Image (cartoon, rainbow, N blue to C red):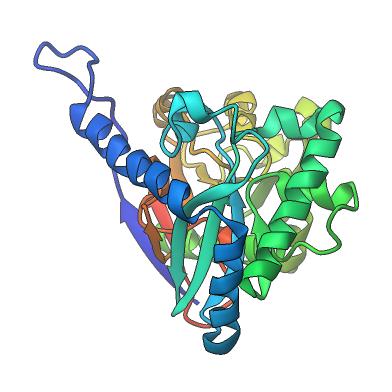
Length: 325
């Protein structure tokens, strides 16, 4: 497996007076992303058309998967959907993009619901209907598989709505390969300790298993301060966040100069977290995803790749990592 490392400074837009202002380029770009999707959905979001495409795909076998994505916050939601449309697509998957990886296509659908709503028991039936809809779309298109973004695979698997989660296995593999790449970039040897935030979680368990033979410490929220390997202080270590976006913030107190942070969680670390890491002289890398083309391209720190959970195994797969500070 090959790797691609991109370097990109994350800075707020400043106007001539040095204060934060409206980035009109981003505003215009967002309309170029959303407006065509609105028009296309009016014409193509029909099951009879999906079935026809599926009949063709059974012969040419170019559509590999159906991928369901959701926004981590309103900023990401408004990158694909106009505000007035958000309630309508809350639990109703609609086409929002094409992903091209290693000569195969994945059809991307999105909903507007987010993490807190997935965990709420009152939405259990809505969640089940979403999963059933994605499976129906997979059959209509004649695709080999279906995948879900973010925490959805873990929740659906725990509720026995789905019986397998290939996206978790591939994401774990991508994380391990990203760790290897960062070690080379940061001149770290194979004996460098690796601290996994969320090491007992749905993906974390898989990552730890793949890291067998390495020095690994699993940290979860319930462990708190007592679980942190403070005896490593002063040594070069890698901290991998595979739990929640905000989790790294709760452990800033424990990081020392020279620590390397790798973020796998969606979305990317906030500017405040990046500033705090920089003050502590800690590097931060973000796993953008797998190198592939997306139409429209993913916004912000995910541009230039597709999420690991949307990819499919391939010997030519390239993991894209971006250094944030």
